[in-house]
Amino acid sequence: MPGRMASSLDASNLSEVFARRLAASGDQSLRQALVATVMHLHALVRELKPTHAEWRSMIEFLTEVGHACDERRQEWVLLSDLLGASALVEEVNARRPKPATPNTVRGPFFRADAPERPLGSDISLDGVGEQLAVSGRVQDLDGDAIAGAEIITWQANSAGYYENQQPDLQPEFNLRGIFRTDDKGRFHYLTVRPAGYGVPDDGPVGRLLRKAGLPLRRPAHLHFMIRAAGFETIVTHLYDGSDPHLEQDAIFGVKPELVCQFERAAEKPCWRLDFTFVMARSKQGVQS
Ligand code: BEZ
Ligand code: FE
Image (cartoon, rainbow, N blue to C red; front, top):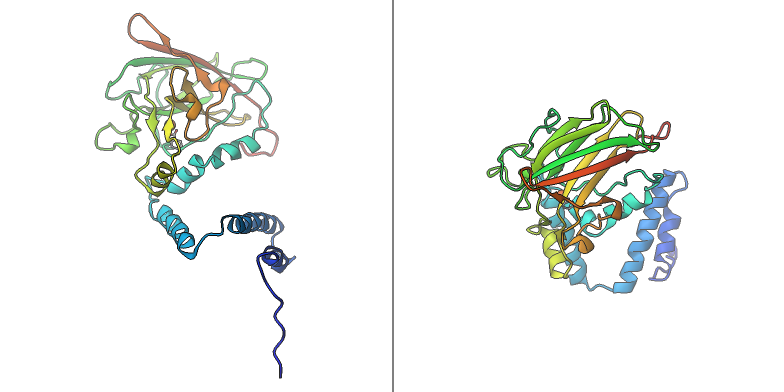
């Protein structure tokens, strides 16, 4: 008995055949995301026409990215950040009214277990670097103070390294802390001026992008996560306006509203920074 005729598949119709194969009963949003992803993947293959060896080395790269991940390192997040995908996700979700403080990428060095500290504390546990006094206010869109807001901060040291990158060289929780705003929505603490740094380039992502000639520097910055009940959480950075790499940030995270001038003082603390964070109310039922 003759077998059934197979319909012919080629570069021109394979994408369409893939889309048709997905059963209508499957999860609809998953189907939509998968079809879009596969269409772009197929278009990429048609455009680049990789050899078998090139395709194999791409698979090997992705395999290495997975193997480079552990509890201390998230190479997939680094890939998303350095390709600009994380910044783009922030942008497509940026629906905050002005003058609310915009979000930027959280980055891989956040720790959820940093200690809460009283206002005025010094978060530089080793005292290395030029002292910086940070102060500010948290307010809503009408300019009213938000008392009891949680300010979670983390930053690199004066050599450009986070405490969790140098567990043997820096005290645990160095340059990290959680503060709460007072009745007037104000907060203040001491730290040291952070240095800019190169993103980790000792793994597959950094090696590949360095080879391609992509700048891997981040301008000096302080990280903040600001939380208050009833408001959208702010996850952002404040950048040192004097840093020469502001225009070439490796993760596309610099926004004009977040660039600050650190003020030089005649005596200790040598530098001062004051910033007002503006929070937008969270929409009902929307998890921020
Ligand atoms: C950071 O700012 O901590 C960071 C963000 C993305 C990639 C590497 C570092
Ligand atoms: Fe950082």
